[in-house]
Length: 627
Image 1 (tube, rainbow, N blue to C red):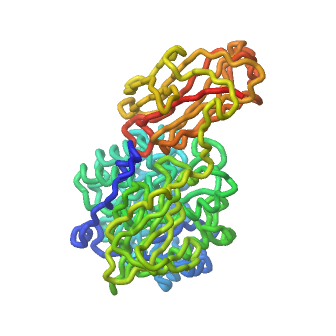
Image 2 (cartoon, one colour; image 1 turned 45 degrees about the vertical axis):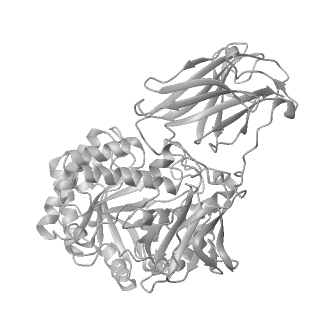
């Protein structure tokens, strides 16, 4: 195996075991869950402004076979005790005619009962009123094959209520009590309908803790049929696997190992959303001029990873929104074409297995039809936490497969492979490979010498090669002082690598508790005026966030934020010494007043044993110089 260490092991090579049909009937007695045959589990999110039969026709024409739509308490019950479903009946009837699977989300407050948000559910009478609305809806649509979901992202303040702590015990108690009330009412009128709870905005450590709080409070014993997740909080689709595993293990821990998991919202934005704590939500990073292309890559890989993990329904967010949309007014986006090609390519196939590869970031997923026809979906991914451009393109030989076979790229362009052993050029954009019945791909081996450096990585130079002034910072004689976070395990060593002095830092934040943690590594410096930039070489085994804090002659501290790609390659790091900086103290003007007296290099991580974040890793630093 080619080593990509640390938390990649948490992503695993094997898919989750799929529950047997007999076990599923306990949770889905009416068999309304989408078939495992594609494209039945693939859906898209709709909203009020596009809720009409025309949009449903477009959803169907694209190839999606499911959709998610809110059903709002205040609209259905505008007069106490009377329920009006006219805003949904016609559209849902049209969806049935098209063969689309609806997922309806119960959501919102109601001024008739004294409130508009979830804070009103602290009162038992209001919980009961909402539960009666839920039961009336389920009874109205009973037997029509609809999936139902209680609320949207109840673990966060955006959709629950503002005067509380996101992912805290209070939210878990309030939401569990609401689900209990709803299921008590539903079980009176339609006990066999599929009602799911959760809709958790995750994956990050506090969301796992919130999920477990709900399980501890008995939410799984209310009669719900499934648990739904929204796997935000990670940068790449491949990181879903770690979060899905954690959630599945929690279901197992609390006695429901076979409860279906559904992914009812996730999309990848073409840019950061506006402000606040969620400005990066759904944003995969990378050069902004390629953001629409990255969205297309991630859309396909998201659906493939969910299939690998046995997820019974996956909903793309969303139909036509400015940041996440792929249809309607956003039809020209590459993701629209990629979605249509994926849905056409995968129609009629069922996930079989992941073909083992000798490079852990390669994904070759095998799908089969009943007639024995096979489809291989293949790509390579960036390391967890990496940018889309961090993936390393290369070629692999697929053992057990002989060409020529038909290859189709993400946008539908077809070609033929050469005769002989099948060789694929892997990139973060998928390739679909048509395989005849009876062919057995047994593994994928990297072709020697084909592994490329990722886009944007600049190979580090020595001070002599760059014509710079060496600073000799990364030696024991430089006088480093190390200040690790409480609970962190850190080992520092001064070594040699090919004749260069290296400071090597092994760190582990996994026992340091939740939240952000840092390693403060301080060294004296004397960088004089006339230098435009500080350069050094960095090599890391996982994507690593760093900050450089520089203290100038006035005592002012100025900050430069850095990111190391984490590919076990020596890469150049550049810290500008001109322009405006974030800073404090001293002159407090954001400008460097030379000489720079000291440097503080900070490694940033998160604790709480979260496999989706760089809790542990190795960072090596060398060859500091100024120019």
